Image (cartoon, rainbow, N blue to C red; front, side):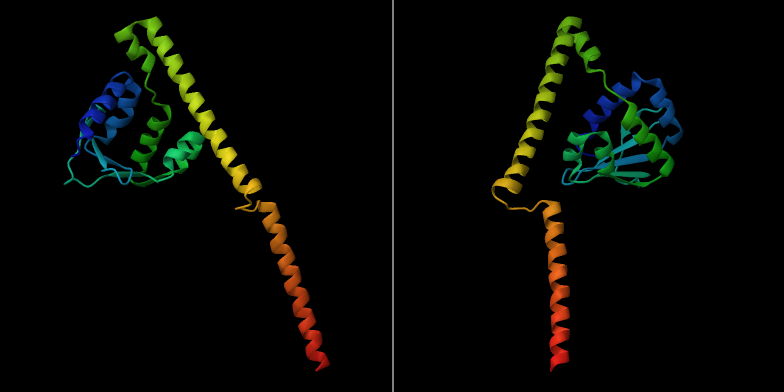
Length: 191
């Protein structure tokens, strides 16, 4: 068991406690273990309880389901949910995998509601609004930076060649190779 599992389990169980439909989907898999791997971090192993809640799982029990995030998962998350889902490798129990992926897609933490119980409704609404605006600004800044870097590499420094230009070059080289082969055949006939 890693030091991350207890707080993660507590957070996930708090989320599951607020969504009975999610616990009902997990309950049939009581006793199964799900392992989440994001190398180089230690794997996170979670066991499913009969009530659909989670518990930290030991390493001695084989995982029924392994969900491995590839190294490009963080970048894929910035591009959207579909890209992120393609950056996940899943192996093991297919029915459990299907249910876990449904939960990943549809189970959402209502940050504003939890925050409202601490700081009040208005303050929670404003804090979540500011955090959302900040996150949108960060995504926009990263996108602009990536676009600028790509334009610099392609246009200014010519470190990379645009795909159309590369394909035209390959086509010209093939045409030149064919012409050279025809010329060699003519020269052989002359000899």
